Structures are given as C-alpha cells and as structure tokens.
Amino acid sequence: MGEVIVITSGKGGVGKTTTTANLGTGLASMGHQVVLIDADIGLRNLDVLLGLENRIVYDLTDVIDGKCRLRQALIKDKRYEGLYLLPAAQTKDKTAVNPDQMKQLCEDLLKEFEYVLIDCPAGIEQGFRNAVAGAQKAIVVTTPEMSAVRDADRVIGLLEASELRKPALIINRLRPKMVRHGDMMSMEDIIDILAIELLGIIPEDEMVVISTNKGETVLSDERAKSGQAFRNIVRRLKGENVPLMELDGDGLLTRLRRFIGLK
Amino acid sequence: MSKEIVTIKGTRGGLVILLNPASNFEELKDDLERKFNSSKGFFKGAKFTFHYPSGSPDNPQYAELENICLQYGLVPNKEIHLPVIQPAPVVEDIIDDTDEPARLIFATIRSGQEIEAVNNLVIVGDVNPGARLYSGGSIVIFGRCLGSVNAGVPGRDKSTITAFLLNPAHLIIAGIGGLQSGRNYRGPAIASLRNNRIVFEPAAKYFNL
Image (cartoon, rainbow over all chains, first blue to last red; front, side, top):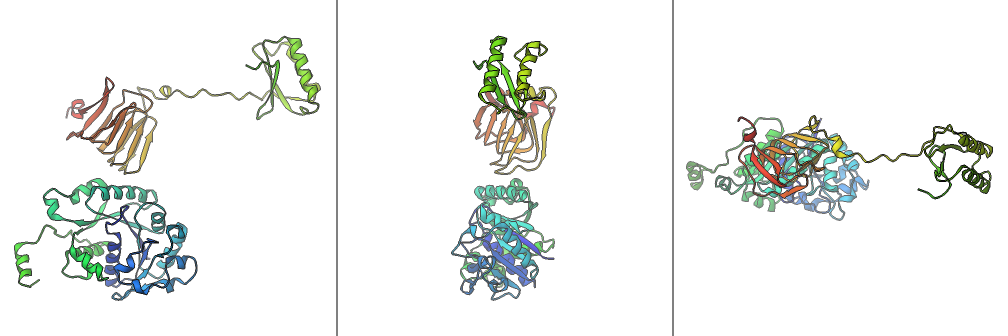
C-alpha cells in the first residue's frame, strides 16, 4: 500500500517545490514508483524544476474534468524510471478543483504508485485545502527565519485540525556559519518552537540554483552537500535511521583534497 | 404596561388573556365581550388561559370571565404560560472564587489557534506567537508563553498569568494591559494586577524553589 505525502509550508519561497522534486527523484532512484502532483494551479513550477515543461499536454484539471484519462496526463521523467509528474493547469486558479476531487485523484493514483507526493501551494486557502485533502502524511518545509517558522507553526496547527497529525519538519537553507555566529536561528531554536519531528536539514547551497536552472535535481549531484542532505531525507522517509549530517563546515583536509582535485 | 383593559396575547401554546389590574370587573367583562364580538368566530377553538394580575384565581368573578370565553368557543388550558424572559446570568455568579474548575489542555497552542475557557485555563505545552488564550479566570502555562493571553475576561482583577517563560505579545488581565514587548524573565514568572497596573514577578517568589 502506497503513501500520499503533502509537502507544505505556509510561506512561499521556502523550497516546497524543490523539496518535492528532490524527494521524488530520490525515491524513484531507489526503484520506487513515484508520482508528483503539482497542486499549485495557476502558478505551476514543478515541471520546470524537473525539466519537463515542454512535455505538458494535459494537466490536473483536465483529469478532474474528465477531458482526458489519468494515464494521459502523467508525464514520464527523462532520467528516472518510475518517476511521473501530474502538472498543474496554468490557465485556471485554485477554485478549479475541490478537496473531494483531490481525494479521489489520490486514491486513483495509489492504485499504480507507491508514493504520491503533492506539492502544496503557498498560503492556507483553497489551494492548501485541496493539497492536504487526500494526504496521509505531511512534510512541513521551513527556513531559519522567524516569518517562515511562524507560518509553519500556523500550518502545523491547520494540519493537526485536518487530522494530519505528526507532520515531519524539513529545515531548508540553513547557513551553519551564520548560526555559529548567532545571526541565524539554529535547528534547536526552530524545533523548540514547532515541537515536531525533524526529518532533515538542508544547507544553503548554490548548487540548488544551478541544478534548478538546468532542470535537474540537486539530489543527483554527488558532490553537493544539499544533495547529500536530500538523499538522507529520502532514506529517512523509507524508515532508515540516518544520523544528521555534519554541516559545520569542511575540515582543512577536505578543503585541501578538493583544492588538489581529489574530491 | 398596556393601557388596554383586556389584552389577548398569542403564545406558542395558545392565547393568554391579560387583565389590566387597574380596571374594575364590569369594564373587564364588557371589554372582553366586545373583543370577542368584534372578531366573530376568530377565537373559536383556541386554547386560552388567564393571566391574573395579582389576586387569587379563585375569585368567582374570574370564573365568570372564563365562562364568557367558553361561550365564544374557546378551550381553557392551564398549561399556557407567558414566555418568561430569563435575566442574563451574572458572570460573577458562575465563577466561584474558592472552588473553580479549570480547562486543561495538553498541546502546543500554535499561531492562529484560539483557546477559550469560562473559568481557569491550564496549558501543558507552549503558547506560540500568534496564538490567543482567553480565560475567565487565571491562566497557567506549563511551557513558554509567546502569544496573546487574556485572563480575567469578565473583570476579575485577582486573575494571574503564570508561565515557565512569560514573554507574551499581548497580556491583558481584567481588561488592563496590552502590548508587552521586552518583558522576559529567565525563569518562571507570574503576571498579576496591582493598583490597576500589570506587574511581572519571578514565580520563584511564590514557591520555595
């Protein structure tokens, strides 16, 4: 039996879509059948992150309106066997879908896929209600900023109210150096406020921007620290006990090795 | 009071006939008959009762009035009562200073969540920024208080607010208080009202910590 996981945050721009794309590719690279749903109707992005924007024919609302079969709207990923995308409509808005339809859609997808990941839009309105309707599990993404943490707190409250108890937390774009100097909220500060289980921490990494522009996911970049962080999260999602990676800067030896091209 | 001699009121159960205590019996009788005559048949079959001004209903004159009603086809029914307007409950009565129940909540109260309690409120967990608490009495938080807390809502100025860390965005006791920026004790603290001003004190003062 598969799992429907919604990736949400409340605040925009904290990395919901990036996280969805990376977790999806990670699970698919381990041989799972994965479908990603872009629930951000009207402001779709997940297709760009996966480099699939040119292949969209049908979208989520077409499936719900019965204009095409579910199978027709699913776009197969270029690199990963078993990874599919159900893109959002760009010409409509969030009211084009209702929570009951999303619930039904998730049930239908679960018949064929092991993991259904839903990329939730920012905000707590209809788009959010649609995205969480069919989910069994929730991942809350936040950045180490008070505004993002506050919004995450609100969203956790709403998730708990809609029976999605015990959401897991991903802290994105952490800068260990700034934390060390006391200029940024630390992992402990955030967990202290949100009081939920931590799924992983992703360090701030330029590689994310580079891979995003290429329509690739940073997870497949062996050298990127953020990619390593995403790979760890994927393993934790599967129930493995992976310790948090050491973010506190590289040792002299590692830097030296990199300098002479060994790593 | 109505200046009419006889007033017929419709209620959910039937008709209530009100008699003006200032009028004498003959006036009452004439007016009642006049009312029934003026609306022939309209009252037929309706249930009715008399609302006696003050005197005892055993007065034989009242029996005569009832007879008039029976003649016009009305059905007596003692079960009909004028709707009684309940006086609004006084909040002070509900809250008993000595033996109050409290609402007990085991949860983190998050941004956007509101908790209300008629009497005291006990939270085992944190009250995060953006959360709101309203309590008729005191508030005790076994955790950090960073949200808005409103205690002693009906004007109970003896109410207090206690937390392991008391750094609320708003703190109001019995309508007094407001923005509370910059207040932060390292340990448990109690806020109370003294001479119409909010006072923060380390809770250790009250315990042998």
